[in-house]
Structures are given as C-alpha cells and as structure tokens.
Length: 297
Image (cartoon, rainbow, N blue to C red; front, side):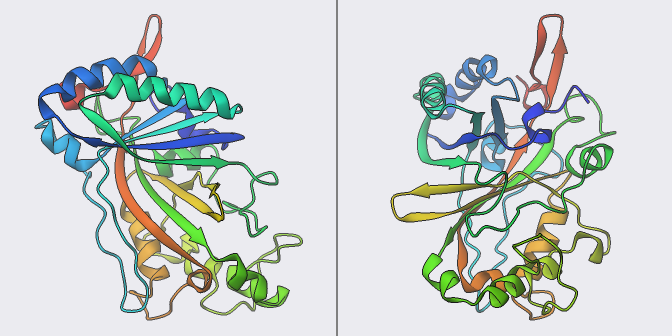
C-alpha cells in the first residue's frame, strides 16, 4: 500500500529519535505544518498528530481520541498530552540530530519541543533485558490489516493510529531474579525465544496473547530500547487500524480485566503515554507527500 507512511511497516532502524512537540500558537499552526510537510517522507521521518492538535485545527479524524486512564489500583499507567510526534529513523545518530533540528526550526514558533528520546536497536531486535521484542508481530498482509486504515475513503485510507509509551526498567530488580523467574515473567525462554506452556497466568506473553481476545487484538509493534545516563528502558510503540487492540491489551496488563497484573510491572513501568494519528501519504508525480486533506491542509 503506497499510501501508508513506509516506516510504520519497515523493521526498526539501528538508531531513532522521538521528538514530542507542544502547540504554543494556534494562529501559526497551519503555516508550521505546511513547512513541516515536505520534510516528512514517512520513512526517515514518521509523523503522528495528537487529538488536541486535530481539534484545535477544527478538524475531525474518526477514531482519534486521547489515551484513557488505564491505571488499576496497584498499577499506574500515566498519560501525557502531546500535540505532535516525529519518529526519526536512520543509522547515524548525528544525522538524526541535525534532521531533528531542521524539524524543530520548521515548527517554530508555533510548536515547541517538549521531550526527546534517543533510541537504538539492540542485539538484532531485543529488549535491554535480552528478550526478543515483537515476536508475535503480524507479517505481510496481516500487518496491513492490523495497522492500517482501509476502506474509509481518501485522506483516511493508509493512515494508522499510534500508541506510544516510554517504559523505564529497574535493572537491579530484574537482575536479582533467577533466570527461571525472568523467563516466567516474560513467558518465553531467553535462550531460544520459545514460549513456555507452563508459564504463570501473569506472564507477559499470556497477558498479551493477541488471539486470546474477542475480537483478536492484533497490533504492529515497533518498539526500541532507549537510554539516558543511568536510566533506560523501552520506547513502546504500537500501530493499529484503531486504538481498540492496544487498549484491550493494556487493560489486561494492568489487571483491569481479571485482576491479574502483568508480571512486567515487577521491574518496569510506563513513564508516559499518548495517542496519535499518523496521516497517510499521497502519491504525486514527483513521489509521495503527506496527505493532510483531512485537516483542511
């Protein structure tokens, strides 16, 4: 599908930056987005727009909403208002730095940079705990069906809904576990990535088994490890044709469905979370460009 931002369907890159922007001047927002648009190719830069920004533009995207509070009495799942997110993808950290500065200048002064996260691929796609990430990701046509809007018309088809959460790990807690306890927490053996049939109900794999939901809760994960000084964890990113599958998984992880909390919360926690609409691309004679007609741009 040539209307989807290509980076959504591609494997995670060696290096990445996530730049979160806040709207400061609505009167200048449209001009800023018009300056930004040529810089977003959907591959080296993937763009997500938050619900508050879409509303401020007096536009409507069916299915776009703010991330709800999915906390349980024992597990906080915080949310954070973000108006615009740029996911920069590449293999050179310096290049990403300069590309980010270019984006920041294009958006200024209507938007200000609120938060940035540097991420990277680790050990051929593993979390910093050493476990493979995204094992059950749908592939090929299944990935399109899970992550991309289809059949809704021009300006909507090819779009995707993104859920982003920055998780911070407590490695001292994790490393104090025995290898068997670590495997049972994830629900897979780290050595060969095989799923454990006898893992406890709280194991992450069992909590998020996409086919165990009704309807099945398939998402396309594109998560990457991050670090800043002594702090580190996982930048969790999931793309869907709606937010329903992500919310179903997150509710079960937090114990809101059956009272069983995902064992991941023993050593990691989300610091923030937000929802975004990733607009489609529009084929042109000179290539593809962002399709912002749903926003009146």
